[in-house]
Length: 450
Ligand SMILES: Nc1nc2c(ncn2[C@@H]2O[C@H](COP(=O)(O)OP(=O)(O)OP(=O)(O)O)[C@@H](O)[C@H]2O)c(=O)[nH]1
Ligand SMILES: [K+]
Ligand SMILES: [Mg+2]
Image (tube, rainbow, N blue to C red):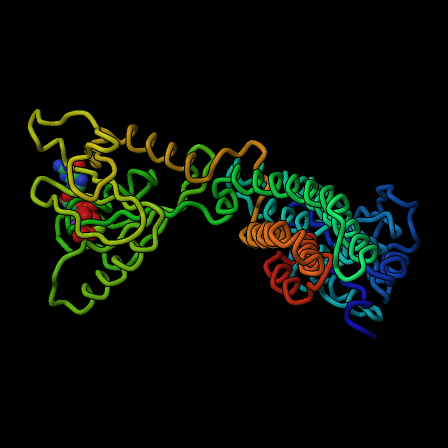
């Protein structure tokens, strides 16, 4: 029997032990499994309490079971749910009993959702939204994932694809109508109008986005600078716990230390790095090399400095903020934070003055980070794009549509070809065409039991 026709089971709730655990079964053997273990097939969609027994009539657990005959189920197949006590031994006994049944096996990661997708219960953007919702750590991630799950992007893409097909039909009709490729302009004008309207709509969605798809990974902020300026102290202050070792000894931090922060709903990864300096110590040298590399690929660099070290030794694309630390030692010189074009040091787009150990200036720095995140991720009202994959396919569709407008009137076959290609990109976005390669990649990332 093909693995896709087998019946699958998995723990769909969190890691045991827990008060209740939910084991889900999907496939043609779900009904028979329920009948064997529960003793009968319950009324559909009605929670039913029962003593589960294995095939040898040994009791497993006092449970609540549910029966969802397909296709009106989460996967579109027959589905059974076992709500049992969430102990490891209970689950082991239930899994043993399920595995003993014919054509039944443990599910692969994401396999329930994949079956739901293959049975048309959701499109690929919705499946991606579901995965993102499960992995959402911050409020903005959750809201974005929910928009995806509600199918907002999928709905737009379906509509665009239908319009492209209509425009294609007009052009194809023109090609058939004309002899010797001489298509009358009055047939092409409505097609061109439609395509231009579509182009504007898709481009608007692409432009309105900021980098909302980056909400999944978060913003990476690197704290870099010379040794002993207080990078790890700042890291701990931002994290509000002692994640990194602080000491008066220069060269304390050697490895890269990361913390995930939730800044006003934005996911931000802050990384603390080794102090950058020339050193003979091979371990510290490696730390410095890693520090430079990590800072070079960050989205924002906080270059920490003190009164002795002010020069920015960072190279990279990302904006750099000069953060002067230890202002508590300055004796009265501590002043306001400056931002924008008049920042103090060459190469810095803003300048802050803080005391990482005393807390001065930290609120301003954090507020500026939140503001940076807002601009970076873009407004989240109406943001539809949740992943780089989706953005790339929309950009491909736009490029094809634009090329089609350039050749209309000159080569109708070429225009039709470009429209086919645009429709194909949107089909890939929805997971309707040509997708085996990406499905494996996408669903492998899912949790088991989902
Ligand atoms: N007075 C004062 N001391 C600070 C401040 N921030 C950090 N320090 C002290 O500066 C010393 C170095 O701090 P760290 O946080 O270890 O500095 P670092 O930049 O991570 O150092 P390396 O990892 O060795 O590069 C410690 O003794 C801290 O207590 C500050 O705002 N004011
Ligand atoms: K130190
Ligand atoms: Mg350090």
